[in-house]
Length: 147
Image (cartoon, rainbow, N blue to C red; front, side, top):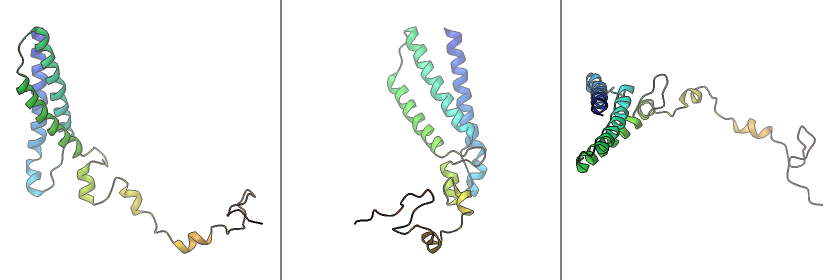
């Protein structure tokens, strides 16, 4: 059981390193206001969450005492960090992360909006069938006639 616990501790440290490394790579961009959440930060936080839960389970399975206050505090801090990283992430190609939407001032479908022409109401209503006209299939399209 001890080699498994040591392996989980090693993976937990790798998760911390990924989260911290992603943060440190963005330090220069923070000064310019161009910082973003990189995927390694999300992967590191998820790795820390999974391995931390596994470590608590392994220690309890061995009968060791676990400081639940310390574990709860670490878990709540990690959940906050994970939520911040997940909500503010940028995806690889044309992602829809919150930062990308705020930076460009448009939603996830901003590329399609740019190429649409504005709706011409007069042309659109001119093509609508009148109250007594029929559609292409010969069925009545307008409101029913009374009488």
